Image 1 (cartoon, rainbow, N blue to C red):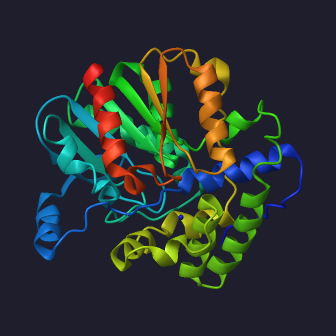
Image 2: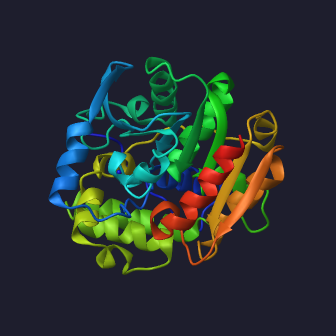
Length: 322
């Protein structure tokens, strides 16, 4: 998911809650891969792995299909495998690209200082990925922390984005104008303290379990996942293990910023997602100009993998319109 430790106190002033929540949500992505793959399937995916050297690092990605390019951006605890339930479907009529963000499996980066871990570095990586692969304007699809990365890229590089899909992106600043928004992150703050302590004690699986339980309102969520999907999460704890013990500035996104976006935006939320997540999406809906909001039934924060059939149908339908 050697540094100065900082703590998040649950019922502290609004500013600290927003700061801690941003750090927490920037990392989150429930990375179950909807399609259970056989050994042959997994070997096939590994054989398709490619690398691109951008911003001084090698970034791994898979690239399938032909047509208008779609780039899938995972959040924390995820990597290119997060989009297992999307790749084949999206690649039928489009060029689908899923990459592993900096610090995610199987990349080999280490976190050297707080600037290495900033959301800005992820945004720069995504912009350079689009440029390096000569993709031109692309359809960006981001989930959770990956949604934040996709949104920042759209704000800073509008010429690279044809459409934007955001699945409950990690944008805690959106709660600042929501009634009760200053207390919504309290539960996250408590979980963050507990998770940090477990990482310090090298209880990584327990730390991840605490975090997943907090953002899904289901303390058994991690334990109910298939072993393969649990392993994917545990393969991607680097940013989690490092980020709780560092201070890192986060760029705040305002309603005025969002009004500058000209690309069409699809907003997705789950009908049983926690209130703080759905409230962020609702605030995005209020601020954006060209947008469409869809609620996925029987779905929490794990939008692409809890309800992949509905997710794929809605996202591809929107992309095909733009």
